[in-house]
Length: 224
Image (cartoon, rainbow, N blue to C red; front, side, top):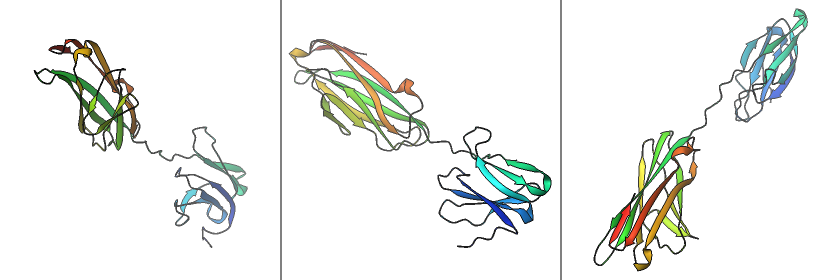
């Protein structure tokens, strides 16, 4: 492969200059008092980007000169009795994030034949980017029976609910129930927590929600 960069190419430096994860080439072009930067991120190296330097650049070196995490270039300029420093100002992409909020509420459903606590789990994507997937887990106290609804499952004492993809400000509702019996007397406290999501969640403050129910009898239940 032959790549034309200009008259009198002299030195070459190899580094990831545009921070795309692939190696680029920087070539001093002495006959044009410039540096040619090549690299398209796909194994091709044309066309070149030309950066001006001082007279008759020869050697070139790549290093992070200003300690900002980006590779810079420095050339020696034979006819100028000096060097040229080219600082890398490549804009770094901002990784996507999705703030997932979790809200768990409970309502007693008391009847002569069936008494139960109905739980509603609302999972919302507050952005700023779309949510690809999310998981909310709720540990179940020993001896407590939970009947999962659509999108949820119970295994090893944990209720797990998934979200699927959610647009910004989109939400999904998952439901589950706790059947009441004569043995249900006491306080039942459940906490739902976001345990995984893609992309990363930038705000942990709204990742969990707790609902507490007091069961005096199967006919007298209050929740908050």
